[in-house]
Length: 83
Image (cartoon, rainbow, N blue to C red; front, side):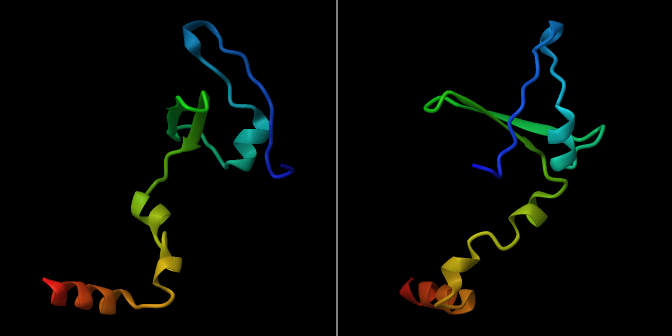
């Protein structure tokens, strides 16, 4: 787990926290950026990630390995023929 940076910060009054400097720099966070917070009830973990400026850019190419053996056009054509 050498690629994971671990550090800590304190929850202050009004439940405010400071993002540690090394995390801010590695995540390329700036004033005005928005963070997405999730809570995983199964793992009892808080997950924080920067909100992408564009979700479509962030998701571009997701799942491309699924189409290595068949083009998307051929797949859609075959599905339409089944209708």
